[in-house]
Length: 276
Ligand SMILES: [Zn+2]
Image 1 (cartoon, helix red, strand yellow):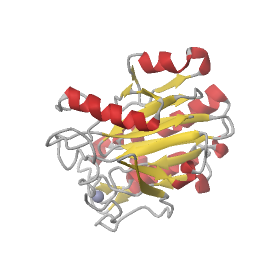
Image 2 (cartoon, helix red, strand yellow):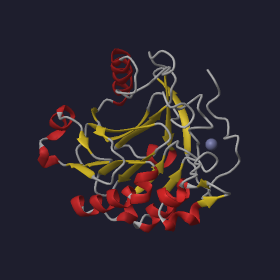
Image 3 (cartoon, rainbow, N blue to C red):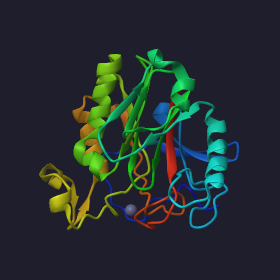
Image 4 (cartoon, rainbow, N blue to C red):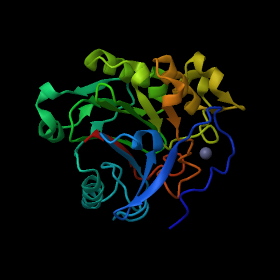
């Protein structure tokens, strides 16, 4: 197995110093965990790699995404393997690069109802229901895990460049405040492996990204979306010491993670969070 601890070869990165993301090998699976979230007993979380599953090339090995061209039975076996480890009922979204937030609350009927429902078209999930595993699937986009230990609420956000431009992160934090009375200062956040400033090249940035994103420009056409997420999280009221940016570039680390920029036909890895 390739080393999972090597650094990005690029050396570029945002100024925010805290990564706090490390790999753990458990039950034959390699999962990345944020130290600050792992310290809480009531929350379960992890980020999968591409190692340890049943998918054949070019989806090898642990592809969790349906609809990308992989054999659905291999994906089903991979999903069973991953969610046996997490224990919760998985809740997926139909991710559409928007800013809609889906809330699953205790009054909605509990974990089985949410787990059995067809995926909603949205890019963020929040819940106060124990026993659910909120899933975001990515290959370069950011998964942003959120946890408020005071109110007992978790969130999982899919933020690609369109979600970043629309501030889906701010929408999710706002929904936690509105739906569950969370104080943003109590929320802990982690940004998973995703396209780094080394590889986030946007030749057409003038028409694709809002003018406010010029401040995240690195060199000619590259952008630091990790810094954008940092700003969106702190802008929503999170404390800087409760935010971790994983600073692992999925394209530089394509041997360990799926990267759409590295190979258009590829799998998806998952970020998962749930209340025990
Ligand atoms: Zn990179």
